[in-house]
Structures are given as structure tokens and as C-alpha cells.
Amino acid sequence: MTFKLHIAHGKPAQSAAWLLLALVAAAPFAFAQSSSNELSDYTDAVARVRPSERLALLERFATDAQPGPLKIDALELVIWEYLRQGQFSDAFAWADALAATDKDNAVAIALLTNNLRPAVNKGGAQAEQLLKMASHGLDTLPQLQRPLGMNGADFILLKRQAYAMLSSAAGLAELRRKDYVSARLYLRNAVALRPDNAEDVYNLALADLNGSAPNPEEGYWYLARAVVLSRGTPQGLEIGRSARARYVKDGGSTTDWNQFLAAAVTPNTNLASTPAMATATPPDAMPRPPSTNTASDTAVVPPPPTISKPLNPQPSPSVWADDTNSSQPFIRKRRVLATTGPMSLGILVETSLANKENRAAVIDNLIDMLRRMNDRDEAFILTYDNNLVFEQDLTNDPHQLEQAMESIKPQKGAVLDDAVAFAAGHLARIAKYPNRVLLVISDGRNVDSHSSPVQTSAEINEAGVRIYCIGLDVTDAEGQYRLRELAASTGGQSRFISTPGQFRDATRYIAQNLGIDFRF
Image (cartoon, rainbow, N blue to C red; front, side, top):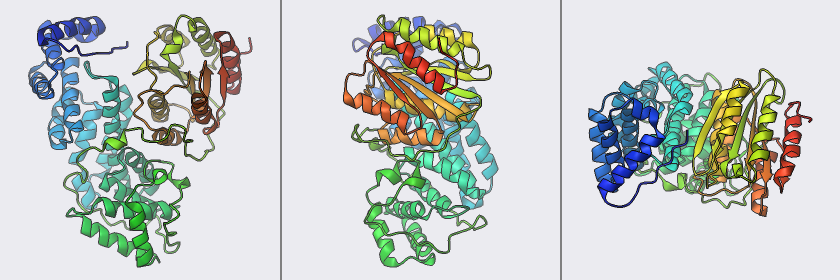
């Protein structure tokens, strides 16, 4: 079910009354499990225009409400308000209440990992417990439901905050367990979303410089970046001394290290925000790192300095802003991906293309293709406009997939980059098979996405997903370029058509490339 909320600006009583009717119509499940008084109190809180009033009423509701969906929603909204204000200690204070109400809640788990970090940082105690906890949070994150009253863009940001915290925690745990390869993967995801978090950057540097197949180019750049980010803090001097000593011990010079520090003042996009780090090269002004005395799997990693509070407590708006030229190509190196065996398929549909003119061609032909999948194949249906909506999660039941396709309703909006990044990540987290494919049905527009092309590319690269695109009525060169690059950079293909009547041929072409017998 799609639920979209637009707060009315008017008299509070009128707004609350309108909102109550909207929520009753759109959320019968929540209403069925909550008293009418609770729903009225909840909608009254959400409808307040002043943030301070809304937060105070939501806190009161979250404290007094009976356990159930509305209490969970209120707790998540309270936590989100504090997170986006940078008041992390207040957000942490509500995590126990959310976990007590919903023990598998990924947001609560993400916040509660913070309780174990000090012991793990000091020497590895409780690393196994932290890894188990973070892994459970990552597993349950796809099941997180958008709270009633939260807009789609904020929900995406909330999930990304949780994903970054969980990836950071898992990376720290793996670092202390000396599984440096796994630590790199987790920490790259965390740094991609929080490039100015000094602790994550420092931990990623340690993971890069130790273990099998170390990556000194990336490792020393991140070590220098950690020094820059921690300047002016109690930990800054310690990080600076240990980083310089490590570089010189491995054969580098003080002059070269100073050049690293100068280059790390301004984050390099390829290095600082893209998880595909192994293919990135340092800026021309940066010296090559020393190539001798690289650490082995058994190297002892010095514990990172204890960081009692975030070194960058105010969330950086640039993490979410699309400040990258949209015509810039995706920066990634093509990986060798699985192309045989059972398939985990994601179908991503722009809802505006399910309008009256296109509906029969798009929906009917995609249903025909799904009916012809192999018995072991699985698929999900995700739609996007201004929101991302799971019409059906991964299943091999063709009837459920058919019902999901038929339930798609056209809406305005096109957060393409957000949708592709989320769909690719979802396949990476829960797909049964390594043969992962994402089929994108789009007109090429990307409006109001919070992901930049570089961030989208990073998530795709980590997910190991081949992308195929069908561009329907793509009216501008930029839209064609966007879809063509999505496909080409992942080993997939793209087809562009101008009329609904051509959709079946395009679908047939894609299906045959996927091993689906869809010839007629």
C-alpha cells in the first residue's frame, strides 16, 4: 500500500481532522490495532507545523501509547527529529524504548550498537557480539516500514543513517577480529555515506593497510584524511603522530606525508565517496605510497583512539546533496558478475509510465515475462515516483508478482538515482543467488533524488548487480545517457523505444539476454 502524506497548512484543528481522515483511509492496519483516541492523538502530533511542538507531542505519545504500530512510528519519528538536528545523545536515549517495542527494529539496533563500541575499541572485547548485532540490523533494515506522517525523502535518509551506523559497527567489529577484507567492505559503505566521520575514515585506513592484499594507496590517503578530520580535537594529536609514524616506518618520507595531508584537506570524489576504492587513483599532486613493509594478516592493529563523541556531530548536508554534474559518467570499474544459474531479479518501474496510454503495454508484457521465469528464479517489484514503494518483495510465486504489477498506480515524480541505489542494495542484502539483475523501466528523468550519481554508482558496485534498462519515451539526451551508463557500466544492456507498441519487443530482447524463454 502506498501512503503519502501532505501536511495541510491551516488551523491546527482543521489540519488534524483532515489528517485523521487521511490516515484512517490509508492505514486500516494501524487503525485496527489502535484506539481511535490514540490515532487522533498521533495525527494531532504529526500535524503540528512547529517542530518543537510536534516533537514534544510525539515524545508524549511515544511514552504513553500502548505497544503497537503507532508507538513504533512515533518512536522512529522522535529519533529521526533528533538525528537530523545532530542531537545524537537524545536519539540514543530513545533507542531502548524502540527496541523494547520492536526488538528487530533496524533503527533501534543501529543506535544501540553505540553501547558496545567503547569496549570493542579498547581491545576487541565484545567484537563478536557487535558483529552479530550489526549483521542482524542489516538483515532487518529492508523490512523497515515508513512511519505514518514521515515523507519519503526523510524515510530514505533515516534508512541511510541506520545503514551507515550498522556498516560502521560491523566494520569496527571485523577490524578487531582481524578480518580486514570484510572490514574494508563494511567501512567503505559507511564512509560512502559519512565521508567526514573521522572514526570510520581512520578504521578504513587501518583495514586497508593490514591483512591480505592491502591497499596502501587508499589506506594512506584515508589515514591522512583522518588526521585532517580530527584536527582540533583531543584525539587529533594522537592520530596525527601515529599516522606519520606509520607512514615513515613503511618507507615514506616526511615531505611526502605532508603532501598527503595537503591533498586530504579537500575530499577527492573518487576516494572519499565511492566504495569502489580499489580502482581509484590518488590526485596527481599526491605522492605514491611506500610499497615496502606492508602488513600481513597477522599484523597487530593498534586500537583507534577512543572517540567519546562524534568528531563531526552535525550531519553534513553535502552527504545527501546532489552536487555532482548529472552528465558526469558513473565512476566504477566493471566487475565480473555471475550471469548463469538461478536469478534474483528486481524490477524497478517508474509509476508515471503506468498511465492510461502505456499501462497495457508495460504491465501486461512484464507480467508475461515474469510468468516465463524459471522455477527457481525469484523477483521483486519496486516502484518509484517521489517515493519508493515495495509492491512485492522477493518471491518465486508468479501470482503474487502478477498482482503486484497490476496494483501499480501512476504518480508524479522520478527519484531515479535513489530508487536504483536502494534496489541494488536490497538485492545485495537478501537475494538468494549471486546472479543478480535489476531491470529498470524509466523515461530517464531523475528529479529530487538525494543520491548523487557517484553515490549511486558506489552502491551498485558493492551490490554486484547487472542492470538492464528499457527507456520509454526518453525525450532528452541526458536521460538516454543516464540509462545507457547505468546498464553499460554494470555489464547490462539498454533499449530505447518511443511508443508503447514497441515495449514487447524491448522486453523480449531483455528477457532473452536474461535466459528467459520469452519468444512470442
